[in-house]
Image (cartoon, rainbow, N blue to C red; front, side, top):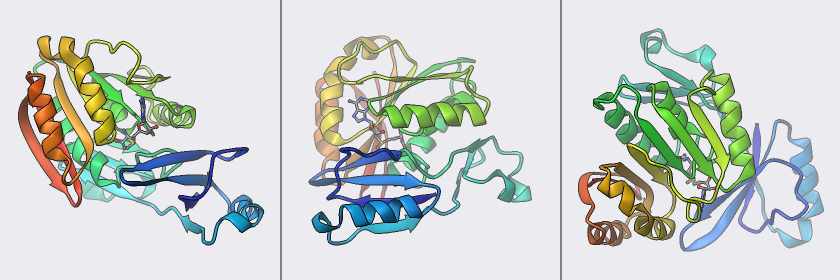
Length: 257
Ligand SMILES: C[S@@+](CC[C@H](N)C(=O)[O-])C[C@H]1O[C@@H](n2cnc3c(N)ncnc32)[C@H](O)[C@@H]1O
């Protein structure tokens, strides 16, 4: 899979799969995906006058291990012998955000699998808001949760459904195109939202019923410097900070009622 990315491109008249990567304080980065280079080179020529430089990068094989709890891989064939007993998810790199390589996803996977490993319920419900490739909901389904994933982006939902099929988890994970900031939110034991800090601030006031019914909350996608405003806002809604972690510039926060 090749990825062409540029902050100067728009999605207008674009027939190739693509994802808009939000970057707080900077214009969103548009990533366009193709299994071959030719259509991307063609696009590059077509939109030449407008864009000075486009980065075309082949997406590489990746593997991510979350302790002994989960192994995310883009290629099942290259799993080391010692890792073969670990529950495994196959997620391809692109065409939706969420291969596990990004720090925000990585932190969510740590907290999510830790929550599920210690959950007293045999089949907890996990709601993944902004599911992208479905990676978090599928990780939860792999841990026997009843998983629900929502995303605004139809390409992301298509990709999440595809990932559910290839991991044979389509009976445990349901994905829908839904705006998490508008639709009524279903009950859940755990809500995980790897969104951006401004969206998280809009989400918090919608979670009062969940706090009362003892839902756990994992909030990620929080840039360094923004974490205290999220903690203050959550405390204002009477959520208690339970865990916090940082990878590079990104923070992840876990709250309980
Ligand atoms: C940072 S990505 C996270 C993807 C994946 N959950 C992960 O952890 O790797 C954020 C996702 O949220 C989606 N999104 C943004 N605003 C949303 C909203 N209001 N409702 C639902 N999804 C939204 C975007 O389309 C994108 O796929």
